[in-house]
Image (cartoon, rainbow, N blue to C red):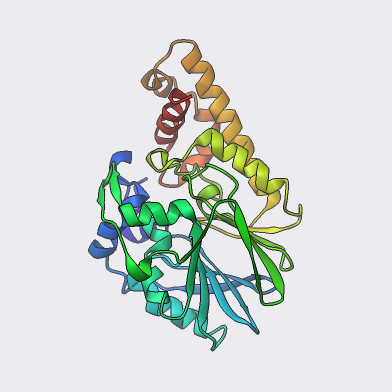
Length: 307
């Protein structure tokens, strides 16, 4: 079933179209075309100091406490006033840090709006891709500059000591893109996965931005190997709040799908033949997001072709 415009916005994408037209990286144009006036930004407590804010685009994580407010991602620029208003309900203190999980505009579109009070942190490839822009299957993404760019970058990770706990920014490797960051709020026992985890659905893996499905599996292993088994997990899109067991299930699905597609390709079959044979039918339940089984099969096949 095709998503409505409002439903699709919750996933940071336009209504269902062929894959080439719905890549998330075309969000600057999306933000200009969409009416955000009806979008409601809601804050829900996860655990400890951590809240999750939902609206349109990627799920926002927020650390709220005596030191002030730090947020993970900031959705679209037009939503910045609504995001601020939701945060003001949690704390009167300003946002001091913004941590981008990757470069896509449904996660970084509000950077410039928060840069008046906040330092923006991200993996080095996030600043590189934001500053260069580039071509995508959905069109051109214009470069950004000035306050929209991260001012602190890292390669492997860093620790932010904030609101009484260590917030670890971890770059687990290639996954959704080549600049992904996962945030582990160590005392609150909450993990924000960014788009390295889509709750209950096939993920969008942005191959042109250095992403990799096989790399995503490895990156999830890195995270699962570090965080406690009882941690609460915030996904990049969708909800509700997940668990490490959900993350393991997601990882298992990825592994099984990759093995199935690899076996078919090794037998000399084309991706179109595999689609016709519906080899991903055992995982149809994961197709409820904007990435459908055939879309994901194409992504996996293209990723394996690079190996």
